[in-house]
Image (cartoon, rainbow, N blue to C red; front, side, top):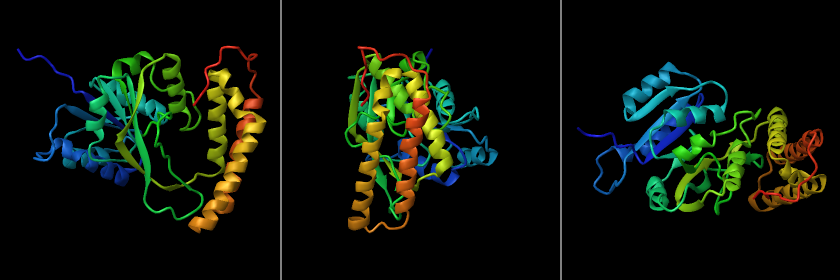
Length: 296
């Protein structure tokens, strides 16, 4: 009798009303499921799309064009809960997370597989792709590690579930990956940066003041969960970050000729730093301890 052999990797992709982006993302993973003489697969994978829109049309599209992809309706409680839902539906030894608007590059999973027996957590390299048309466009870029951004990292599934997955208490889709990374550090798990595990992330227009405030509340929630991190968001450090924003904006104006969106970018950055400081200031935090785990 043949015993069940779990796949090495379960790729978890949360999605919400981004059908076109998701199709591009899945197209990057298609070679793993097609006969290809140039690809030498030495592991099995599964791909799980967990859909917070619960879109029947998307389910039918995936069934027709990406039959190797497992579709599941999400819990409709934000990206953190959606990723946790996908993780519980997975069977792989490793969970690999990316986003529906990201483009995993050739050799992505092969690079992770090379390090899989050397550590418990892996983060890949994230680079921006496409034309940046405005100063207030943004894209996450991770060239050296120390971020564990949810668009490109892997963690042993057993460890992820034992740690409780992503914290679902954040009011905005922000800080839950940083909070998980801090717990990884506190648990002294071995973490490796895998530069050849690359995903590309498109430039996108920064969201407005409503999201800025929600993001600030998420930062405050992060500090509430980990009070030793409060010093990172002092008034002085927030002012320094504002200064760097102004300098970076002037650089983009002069050298990249990004005029449109420059004032909006400065306004949103100033607002972000101010509201982060304000919401953290309102917290009833315990007195600082001598044993502080510093963030990256």
